[in-house]
Amino acid sequence: MATKYYTHFVTAHSQAQSPGCGSEWSGVVELREPLSHTRANRELRALLAHSFDLDSEDIRILHWARLH
Image 1 (tube, rainbow, N blue to C red):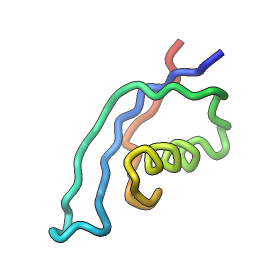
Image 2: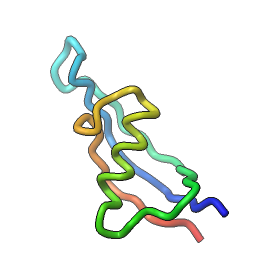
Image 3: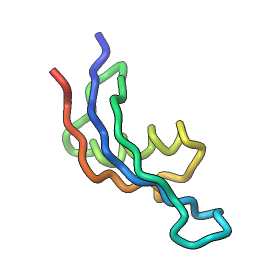
Image 4: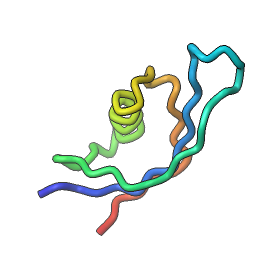
């Protein structure tokens, strides 16, 4: 069964021409397996970065919570 998380994060494009160029996003992410508590931020950043074709360092998680 999939696990859903609400996420609120900002992206910063390290390759962008203008410094500070990025966007703020929020929404629901559906994962096949629950995030591990010890590495949740790192795992979520990696997943979001892959989806946005960015480096994980370009993602800053502001808030996340598991949906029930």
